[in-house]
Image (cartoon, rainbow, N blue to C red; front, side, top):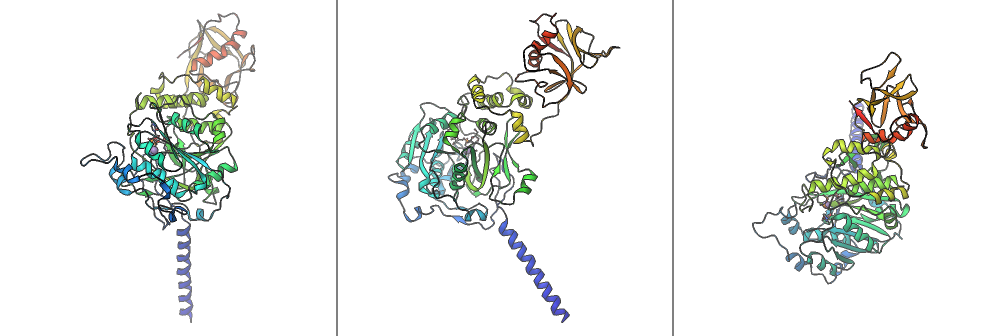
Length: 545
Ligand code: UD2
Ligand code: MN
């Protein structure tokens, strides 16, 4: 009797364990190891997800209709890899494999299983899809377009706007305009992806814009979650989880659902883990993930919000940096950025640019990111320059228009972004620099704790008998003497400078809007000069180490 009972308990225990495992397995999110922009080799895991057929209803039942008069075979046959050609040469991915795949392959539904049972409004607004490209391979470009047509509710696709950014062969684009809903615009010269997208947005007729790279494959129900979120709040800018299409064999691989966009001070984009507290707070795996920045290529945005916020900085060239500029602007000017785990789009991540940069790759990236840093990063831009010293002194054109835009939109300071959107980005430790602040032959000094004045320089190490101190610690953004910092009394002309307890959040102590350290001293000059009126006004302050 006892044995029977022991056996029964054992069987029940095994059943319970198996049940738990089954539940966890079912509930598991699709994952792969970390995805980076060059992580084309990242492998996804199966988890028995459903396979999404090439065509989804209603197209599955209506063969032929999808492409109208367009002759797919002739289009693809028009450009073929010649025997012996390096399949990676022109596109930095394996063209042979892409050509071989066909344009309607089935892919795995990589979403969390719970996504499939979500409902979306039946009256979602339609969108204009904007795809800009320069010398894209025909097979990847066509697969991008076809996947959109096959896997989106037709009523949501107002049009697909292709912007051919001066590719060598105009027919790559022109021929595709025979596909219903597809329009083709060709730039008269190479503009780069930023101006090309703005051109596309300006001609779009739908109220919602959807941007895609030219080598994507959208997955099941990719569009509805994004349009739903934007419909609910037009200030949201949303992107999908970007799955990986292998650049070698074109396998469609699930990306991790636990990543968001981040960057380092050199303005290098990276995928990073969602902070642990946020992860713990996420009870629902279908919930949106707040992200400090977006990768840049695939997102949905309300058209009037895009225009209201100043579209893009059209003085940025070719490629790079526009994703930071847009992300800072969206957050700082009243919007938000999110990644929607129930929307998945595959993208071929490459290891190099397959196209040329007329001004050179490095200079272009510096120009674009410098513009983003100069307009949006306030005093934090110093960390960008420290992390990317080669950027100093490089040309970046006028940013007057963008600064006016920022003022007009009444956007928050970058400090707000750091504190509220991306507190995980660590500000580098400041190494203290000790110096005297010199004007002409005189030095700025404190006498006791609260009197400031100019006097004969005594040398950096000198502390006089009467507590006269000329040594300053320069720790951005403050000028310190132990716990006391140089501050102006008020933001009015004629207000005096004084010493007070250091506080980086006190704007009267923080250097504002100045490029280099000298300017900070100069910005105090007007105030100092009133107090120390006996000194020559035209002289600037110099720092002597
Ligand atoms: C990522 C983004 C990309 C863009 C870029 C930063 C994704 C998936 N991709 O780089 O969209 O935000 O970061 O700028 O997030 N193109 C042109 N004209 C040019 C150069 C490129 O039209 O002069 C097209 C190109 O054909 C492609 C798109 O712009 O469709 C993006 O270029 P990419 O695929 O080389 O950029 P990617 O994915 O490395
Ligand atoms: Mn791309």
